[in-house]
Image 1 (cartoon, one colour):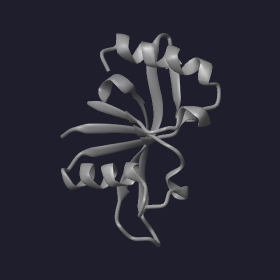
Image 2 (tube, rainbow, N blue to C red; image 1 turned 180 degrees about the vertical axis):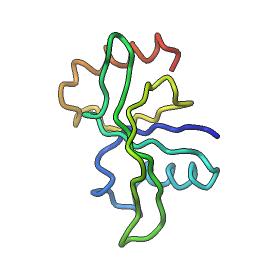
Image 3 (tube, rainbow, N blue to C red; image 1 turned 45 degrees about the vertical axis):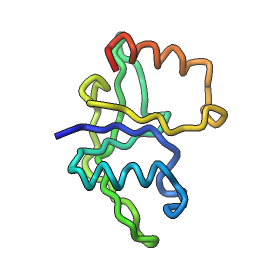
Length: 110
């Protein structure tokens, strides 16, 4: 099973009819992928290892209840098959740290 990580704005505030991240999540779920949801403040480095606090996520096209969180996990980002960074760079707090973090991911082969 493919393990997909997604870093995005709070899923509770998206507009599911227009949000392309939501469309990607629906397709990933349709394919049977395991979806790990993260926000920027869930990402961290521990002794040079890129890690995150994630929540397993399921989604559906229901305007009343379009997502549900499952188990919370603390994982090494290297355990994911791919990571989607779906944040607008202008909305990222402490943007100066993002290139350093992304460089660590590159070193780890992500």
